[in-house]
Length: 426
Image 1 (tube, rainbow, N blue to C red):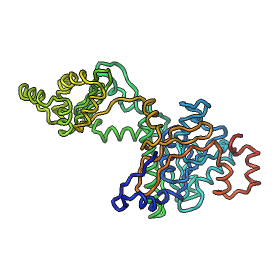
Image 2: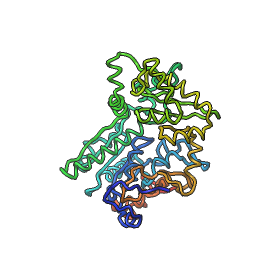
Image 3: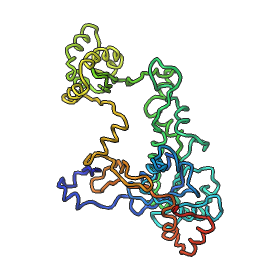
Image 4: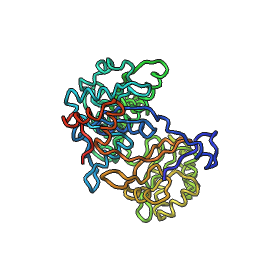
């Protein structure tokens, strides 16, 4: 199901030639040690694993707090955990013991040009202090994901509350706050962490210098609010932006309902999209007449935004006379920007059909079964991007301790017996 996109002009369009040019994934050989829970840091590590890095996830004995987080499969295994740990290697270590922390430190600071890379979200753990770690490897690439900028704990939803987004979300006549169900700041922070890691690794390759990079959810969220101009707008106006419900801010976009009661999102951000929407709905003359009679400027984003209620009132009559299928066909025919609303269940059924071209594929996960699983959304022209399964907890403990640290089977056996490390549960 997962396709390889041809993004490079130098790669032939011939399928056989493309297949012959497929190379190893770009981060093959890079080893990242991850000591993290929940979404932000693990999603950053998974992005690197999808691009070929060997990501060794260290969990405490029995698993971290996210081990059983919902949603779960009928077997009780966490789909959440499996989804955020695809393609990683799982090592279980008693991080409360001195010897366990020593082993984790040795893994994080192991020698090699593509090793000595640590990603974690446990900033307040003394054994993960940068100065202490750097005594073992001076050029360590050390990426720390935090909640708040000062290192205090926070989650996506508390950071979202701090930056004011819930006051912008919801219906125009609604009261109170509305949280966003998508943990966007977690995911953006994970992407930022993986970018920072690669930038630090690139610098180390050129200069031999290590790096400590701290990325907080608070900073990522605040920076995004500034980048979009929202902070500057609040600063200059001295007030909060009004809620618009399902309407877009600063342009025309709204949800309109068809004859059979189905919602459709339509957007006219550009002039071309605006004319395509009018052509699809047969309202070109009506809007021209309104513009002339009332002196409206509807060919600009500002004009459409100012008169959005009038535009929706005119368009609503057309949608109310069309079935969903007829409306979508008319919108497709003119190239109007639109989308029908679908549920997660509908999407899952669609993507599970054999032969579907998508970023997801059906993959067998231990203890879960065959479920829809994403490959890398980065589609390199000469690299296969296949979805991968998550490891079983502790699946690679023995293999990693032997292969990375060179411990003998007898040494590993003693560590297992003493409860310093744990392997895969029977």
